[in-house]
Length: 365
Image 1 (cartoon, rainbow, N blue to C red):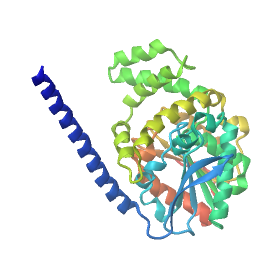
Image 2 (image 1 turned 90 degrees about the horizontal axis):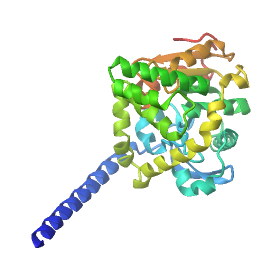
Image 3 (image 1 turned 180 degrees about the vertical axis):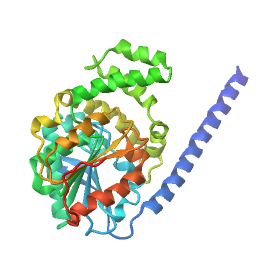
Image 4 (image 1 turned 180 degrees about the horizontal axis):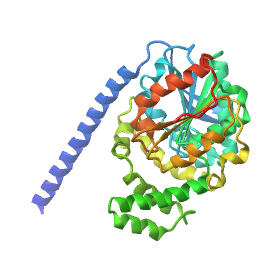
């Protein structure tokens, strides 16, 4: 018995040593990351801003305050990316003042306010928060035009913000634009089954068929569909999902609680907003907009099916509408094709903000 206790003690001691070593390595990676991400000139602000009556977490990074503002609207709902901003937007700060916002019910905003403090989540409530943030950015960065960048769920928020206050924004961009949630989920469901069978994953296909087509009976079924869908995505996207935990834990300003908060916030936000999103259709609010619009879409995206976005673009009436296909990309092009997106934003979006392009109306492939 004593020998067993001794063996257990040695195992625990060894495990504690490994954990301690992991923390030492993590600390070294974070210190190196902070040194690399630090902006010696311009603005590098991490702050709480009161929006809609609650404090919400906002980061503002850019090397030149005369650059256009890029207001990033993260997806999810509930999937804040401000912790990963130094990695995801490395190089973007040379051309834009990049603003990342942990929305109500997401990230550090959720960690500070909790479920009760976040209040009921509605699309309208989130739009008001976003408008208040844009107005605050106008005050803090006078004269800098604001480009909206909606990612997945953030594209719903962005479209509705653009409709509510078109005078605040010089252009709109989206990656993974939502068009019609009901139709999109149906295409995603059957498309995932087709992809599973194409790679001879009959077990996965039958598991999805057992759930049945959307609307799903519960969020657990939705999560299962998404898990199977991700398994059919291009390799770069599968790897990005695999590595997201490590990326968050080793981010320059990352905290151990950020990853747990991401999980909790996503469950909370999706639970409140999934129903309203199922009823949302972009065309219901009209197809006329006052700002140029550019849509970036992965050719393998089935979260927000590419066919719906490419079909929508020619119908829109705006000063300019462009559709840009990202080859070998899924739904998370920012994570997997960040350099390509950065170049496209500099070429296509920045000139709109600076008034240096002739406005076009033809969508581009």
